[in-house]
Image (cartoon, rainbow, N blue to C red):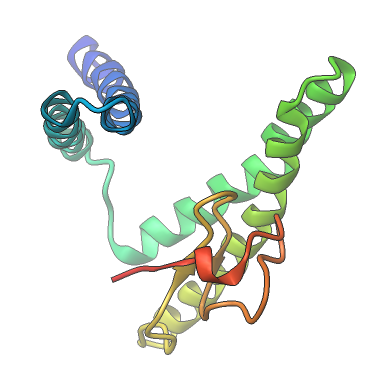
Amino acid sequence: MSKTDENQKLAFASQSQANQKYRAFAVKARQEGFPNIARLFRTSSVVERIHAQGNLNALKGVGSTLENLKETIDKEANENKTMYPSMLEQAVSDHHKAKFRFENIIKSKKAHAQLYSSALSALEDGKDLTDGELYFCPFCGNILPEKPDKVCSVCSAPAEKFIKVD
């Protein structure tokens, strides 16, 4: 990998983190009653996403849908089998409240894996997913093909809190 490609990879990581941070900063500014500062952070977040996507594309980091699904399934499996369990173990050892977040992430990642596997199976059959709707829990990140009846199966959030993805 050339030094320029290494720099693009570093820029992608930095811009991706900035995108998420600026989104969080916008929420905080809005909560504190600063709508124009919130708008500035939201706009900056979008610009960082555009920059990140440009670097990812330059690095040829976006393949076919089949390649992208396989990469995502591998990444999710690694996170669920290795990364998050070790983080959970450390949080338990440290008696840290992050334990609950890591437990919920591990549970929601299992649901993600099922959805990605279904998508891969459909794609390999030359089809799209048959489920036209997706809902997610804004508290734990659980993704479901339909709105739950009562509560989130991961964090027990009320079903009415789930957000339908357009």
